[in-house]
Image (cartoon, rainbow, N blue to C red; front, side, top):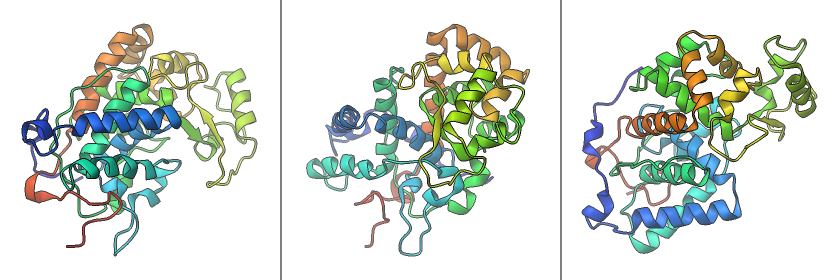
Length: 311
């Protein structure tokens, strides 16, 4: 997998206030993220998924947000993007910024900072994030599957993909803890319950999954899903690890974290210590958010996060 040459050191804390280009940028983003969360709670979950899908694919550059238009095919059309939603509200945040500081704040920084603020709203830790990213002028749809792990990939494969952007085994286990607040489309679950139930699944949990996903061949566009965490579904906490230790992991990759000798010790430790989970999650999220950012002339600041600028 090719990478870009930009250094994360080119980003800086308080970029918009220090440069005076948009002193209230981070405050405005936080206000908008909070307002959206209060009205549409699942937006906070979407922002966390956005930063993963955007940043792990080559660069934190908002390429994920591009719609199919003007010769560009959107990354949103990839099978890896199944179930992603709330993209339209990114433009709600962008519009608020444009009113105060036209063409100053990048969509890439909105992706990063909205995730940071979303984590806090969901009970997670605050992460000090640097800013100054620029937006990509292209989509990497053809490369998405080469970067984003699949739900049934082996643990060595998953670890390899994260290691390619500087996230170690401990950090990978921590980032997968974001599954605590997610939900999974039945398309990615049914192979574990049909035609026979995966023996690693808790029987009562398998019964719940069959209730949520009653058909072996669900329609991909149908709203059929199961939650990773039924106890604290809107809290970014260590319940995910407790669940998978009890054989209640939704995805095959979740359950394999327990059985793999490289990842099991971290699962055990995070299940026992929520503060430790939050600490490792913060570190890994920071590394993810600084993956090969575009700076200065390498990118642009989009007027509309859905389209490249037409000069």
